[in-house]
Amino acid sequence: MVGIILATLGADGDLIAAGGAKPSTPDGHITVDLHGGTMMDFVWIKPGSFLMGSTSSEPNRGEWEDPQHEVTISKGFYLGKFEITQAQWIAVMGTAPWTGKKHVEKKPNHPAVYISWTAMEEFLRRLNEVAAESLYRLPTEAEWEYACRAGSTTRRSYGDDDSPLGDYAWYVGNTHKAGLPFAQPVGTKLPNPWGLYDMYGNVWEWVQDWYGDTYASLIVIDPTGVATGSARVMRGGGFVNRARNMRSAKRFSYDPSFRYSALGARLVRTK
Image (cartoon, rainbow, N blue to C red):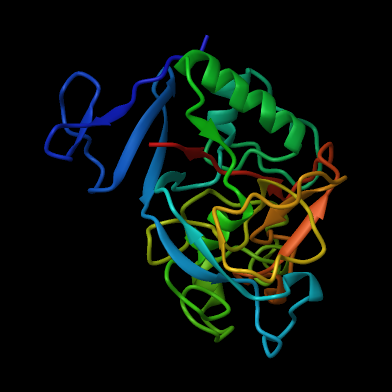
């Protein structure tokens, strides 16, 4: 059984936690008790517009990042401050799919890995069943990139230079090459300007969309990707990848049943 305690909005717009107390997190954040004190933090992402995809001059880009186009996110949403942890997965599902697998550090604050897109749907179903409404889901690909960019137009939210990457991301340069061949504890690198951690590296993150080879070359509002497909989109890069994969526009995809040591997710909670 999963119990949920939510923060809500008071009449003056302030966040009020269940029971009437203001949450201890900063403005624009809420904290949810998934079960028995296992908490999950969310950051409020305001509506806005951005350029999705990459320009033809961006190094290491792929043609599947074409064309760069204007996207409007018309509704704000809460996005997980961190990737889903092993403790959070166990609290909801009662399972540990990473047990006995290679390249995994089995600890509560490390990302939940070997999680398929299909398994994520069951995770979400259980959360929404207890909430008695559809509050939780995966981010759309557009929402993910919008939050990752955090207002930036550069390759990464902090700029174009590769040299600071190790301050923001766990990738092959500071994991495998440092004798750490597994995902690291969440939130141990610097956040992006909107307070989100590990948007680059650590683990790839499933998003909601089916994968399409190109984007629509239009100005679009709240896109959800192609209607059907055989693969789901993954974003952000993982600890197994080189710096070239740690970019806001980088896309990858795999069969929804795929599981891997560098693949997890983060949640959206609707307002």
